Length: 217
Image (cartoon, rainbow, N blue to C red; front, side, top):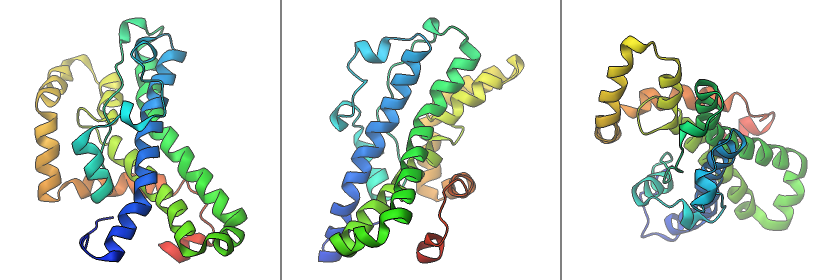
């Protein structure tokens, strides 16, 4: 994504067009985690007021800024207590994937909206309205793909942990202690792209883009 010319009118415009997508993406992502946890027996997120679409309930400064300016990031994780899970191995996977699933579902809904109502929407709102909806697609897919990277504290690491043979669990605990440092090193060296891009392309293949693909990809 990126906004290199924030001082320019166009840079500021793109920032403002992206903000609604970022606020929705982080809120719905964490809401889906909390709701999935509730469905499998864990009331922790609900008790702490995190079953909410209010962005302030899920705001993480660094993760939100990265999502806004770079295109991938994270929100403040909802609290999960696996002792409530009825089937811990299955439920940790379901809860971990729920956030990304919510983001992908949002992107699919937005693409379908553009395919069905795109011309009407464009005539009503111009290019600005079209870009707002398209940013919903790209930001949600970016958040989903980034969080599926199997490095703690990202969701993909919990899926990895659920299927990891016991003899390798100590490697996961090492990653958990150092994951945030590893993530920042990968981010600032650009290596993260080698992990992010294949997941992003895989998720992108789930979108019913049709003739929209030629317009944006």
